[in-house]
Length: 99
Image (cartoon, rainbow, N blue to C red):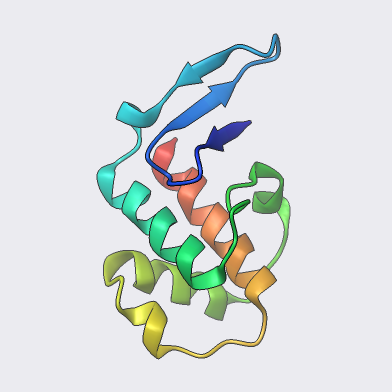
């Protein structure tokens, strides 16, 4: 499980014994900034959820998230119907980036 503080400036893994292991330095700066952008856009403090990586989305949501990662301003210009599917696509990309 990966957790973070409210400002997305610190990330940590929680192991099976409940120990918190700081992984902030292992996360690319671009991924951390992307978390902040998407959380602000979706208004979601509980953005990161590994369980969502197992969910299905349409390709368009994966495309939107990948494009927004490359060009953060893109997310402001695109319309979409399901914030939940966007959150799923975000988690798929985020965990791909940090692993």
